[in-house]
Amino acid sequence: MLDTLQVLVIPDAQVLDSAWVEDTLTPWLERGGRLVYTGDCGLYRGEGNNFNRNEEGSCLAALHDQPRVAYIAENLGRVYYLLDTLEARDALRPRFSGVILKVWGEPAGTVPPIAVPATVGMNLYEDQARGRLFVDLNNMNLNPETDTIQSASDLIFSARIPGWMAEGEVYGEVYAPDGSPAVQLTRMDAATLEVRLDTLRTYAGIVLTARP
Image (cartoon, rainbow, N blue to C red; front, side, top):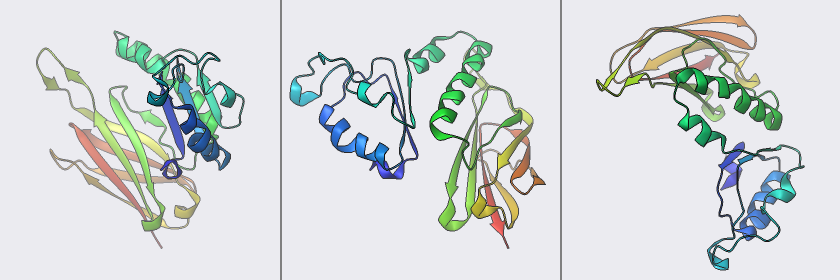
């Protein structure tokens, strides 16, 4: 199951089965997997051991110094969630990004924001078999008092094109449930594409395809 992943993030999972760590997680790391774990991961044993506390500490501690493994002492996700302002949350993002870069190096495909507010989330998916990249954008600028979402406009970000896609001409299509936003692509160099989206109401999926 883990072989379908490039990086695994375990956020403060206090209960972990030591047998799973030894038989599944460790071999996956040895095959090139990447791991980030936070907080009190693995302090307690699994169900077969009555969830007793590990006397030796976290069952992940032995992995701490391995290549492609990073540990964040605090539960960073919970800290992020409890912050009151978007500005404070945004200030934490470089820290998590730095940890990802530590275990991953420079990934083949990334989407650095150029003019994208912190209220817009972006996720990148690769489908090498079909020659496509997917960029999902989610607008999280919700006003809970009025139960309304403030649209975002004129979003700009760059996409680093993986090698298997770099030789062709890249085309883009946008799919959105609430409108037909326009996308504009500009090839900056052989490996970088600038993407502009004119508006985002709630969600948009951008499909990038390379053609000969």
